[in-house]
Amino acid sequence: MVDLPAHTTEDGFTTFSVVDTEATIIFKCEKTLKDVLRHMAKKDTGYGNTITSVITNLLVKGLEQEKQYKFDKKLSAIRTGSPVRTGEAIPYAIKSKIKSAQDRSSISHYANDISAKVISVEEAKALMESANNELLYYLEQGYSLDDLHPNKKSFGYKWSEGNWIWEVSQKTDEDEEVMVNGKEITRKKRLENDTHYLQYVDNGIEVIAPNVFSNALYKSYDERDEYFNNQLRKVELQNIVYKENADEVLKLIDECCPQGKVEHLKSYIKDRNKIDVIAAHLVKLQRKKERRYRYICLDCFNKEENTYRQIVFMVNRGENRTDTSRDFYEEFNKVKEVPRKRSKP
Image (cartoon, rainbow, N blue to C red; front, side):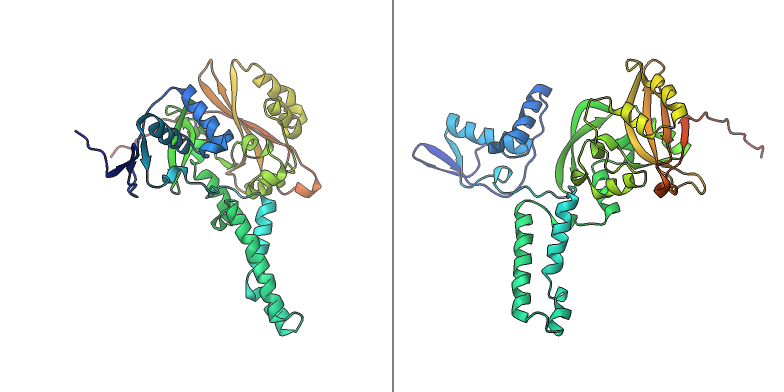
């Protein structure tokens, strides 16, 4: 027999005393139900912005109406306030303003002007107070100052939700909940029997910016992680924006594939019932004196033959990018295993 936790009874309601000890409930449900809860989390702000907060809200309201059960304080999952966007990429325009406010909030920013009598100490204090008010505004919006990290590290934050193997792998129709930096995130499950990432390793293909459509080219310049824009800038693609489900792969081929190979490549991926373009990545090749170049990699899956092929290509993107772009086209398949010769003892 399981007893109810500590409680009091008054006016027909049973009020439970909330303790800080956490507990976890995991349950399976139909995908339709999960999609409804996710929609509520993202579109209906009255229930919080996570599935957990939506479920907790509904449970608390249901318990109060059906059982006259209440809690002596608001549960942590449904407490109001701006969500802390830990690990989330801060748009470049906002990041610049936050960095500027951080600089102006320090007395060292005004030290030389104070010494030179350009401004008074009182004026410096007023400017510092104004800058700190700006920082407080962004903190109220949910931005974390911990995320003002260098560009390459910001990309690491993105990849912390998986890793490069997860990024290039095919995904299932199921979602999985994983913990990243103490925060629960939802992502698609990786197809466990998909090991074609080994082709990247064997062929020396290094993913620099994965899934360039969803991570960059579907977004405006200001919405992207600064790292992606810096990498795309090496091949003059930082200002390109594509609309989802609008033959974006074909447009990318027109933009970046050498003219002599355009029709060949389009013909290869034309039958989408046979060839599935899993993703498009920005990559470099691990070849001597060639690592500075950037290429587009179309990762293709042949459904009939159950084989994978990485098609890597780029065109010279102009005289300002001769060091990082060039005409290139190569198709990479699974490396055939060579039987090892064993020497006799």
